[in-house]
Image 1 (cartoon, rainbow, N blue to C red):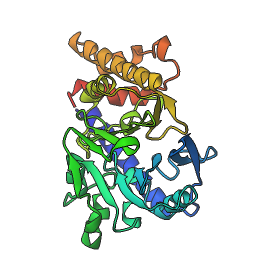
Image 2: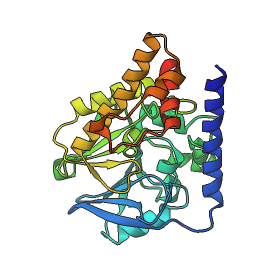
Image 3: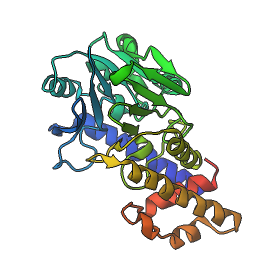
Image 4: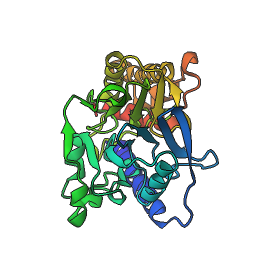
Length: 307
């Protein structure tokens, strides 16, 4: 119990320090555009940037009559996003899809035109509208006059936006990083944006404390995504500096579920978290995925607690 409390305090402390660091930063992290297809781009931190930089990866989808974005980085980067879009097309930004509520994925929402249609899962909308919140949730950004930026378009399980070559499919498969994660598929581009359900090639941060995420359900949600999404070749992860392949996303699901399985088996056998963590080794087939001991411990502790 004491270990769980300490892990929770450390996680929240890290979140608070991260938020404070980016509010106080003096220099802006440079961003760079990577081309996925003729009309789909990924706006990521420049390759020289270490750490979180400007926040999560933003997708720029140029349609017949406007531009749809997926995620808007940290507060203060809205104008950067607008400038990069203007460097690609003179079409207006009409739609923003937030994969989840966190400040590094929805921070630029309030810096975009009032005419933008913000689209999220219904649980993410509820998170954004909470009366009280921790910095990672970002609900403070949508209070007072900024309440006008709260999303008006929500969905439950699946939703399609636009049609023909512009079509975007949205999927929610259950709890994971938060309770409102959206998988975004650009059908004509055969590309998936995972948000932080696939942050990078390693064990993820899971917002169990504030976002109602679940380390236990994260694995089953990944499996449902692998089984329920078809015709995708390219994947834009939440924070990886470059796009990856669909096969690498499938491998991530298997890698993560292996960690969960080892934790569940260890608990069933009456072994301690310490013993299971000490015995854990990344399987050879997933050797390119990072699993620092503290990340393994945090994930397994959550699984032991059924969270």
